[in-house]
Length: 224
Image (cartoon, rainbow, N blue to C red; front, top):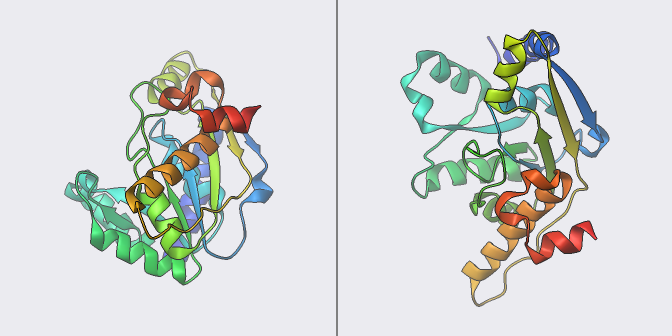
């Protein structure tokens, strides 16, 4: 089975299943480009997020990271191979994964990733990791912030137990770019760029979801 066939199958089955368990409000989908390199950055609440990303990106050249913990599963190994996804070790600097994805961005593909690195336990934004900022700067690729609400695992399950569909909102923000680093203090620049990414996501979220960025000066500037 080719990547295109598997993506089509996943999207067809995924759309059917998600419609059965959720009502989705998808705001500003036209901001997701149909072609060209870009990095879609989003918050991460639940297991449905990855399915939604594959469903809604609607591109054959979508690149996604898959956490190393799923390598133990034969089904996941098959899916990663067929979808041409990239394994990511979240607990160390995974230079091999970064080089692989950077090359694909330079070829004009779309990357989807959650800078937090894992699902938020509280539902609110946790501190972002620098991977997205690093890739955006190196590839000179625009970033597209996406905010998701309503996909928390416990919320979806609670609704299903009451035979009610979950209410999910996906809001796509305006594309933005990061400035190149100067000659000095590159670590500080990378941190500033990571904060920019997270604040762009936070600005699309309700206040209760903004977490550690709720009082960030850049978020205040974006939401004034």
